[in-house]
Length: 141
Image (cartoon, rainbow, N blue to C red):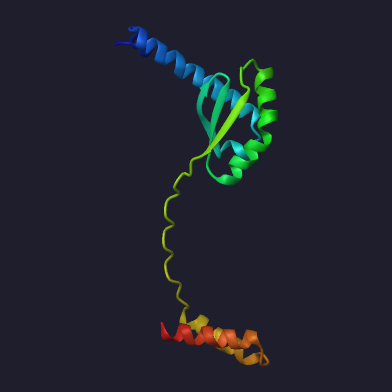
């Protein structure tokens, strides 16, 4: 049985690719350590070619905040030994799954009766009118 490292180191191209992947992972961890916790889930490392670091942001608000903080992020990364002088931020919107349509709500007969009884006890008001409309609508179902 082959070990993954043995396979990756078997050719110089795969070894270089493995090294780049490891460097990318280390840099991503360093970036996560300096980016505020509130932004970590909404951004990620796209590319690094010294001295330019390219980050992806899930939306414009996150991108704007990252741009605002870029000088501080660069300072902290340089303190960790990263040769970064420029941060570029690209918005890459991730598509959220469509919401599941909710099931229509129904009111039991007892609920309809309680609603009608309560509406009768109220003085004429917008609340009473709304409850009566709700009762009429529920009666049709």
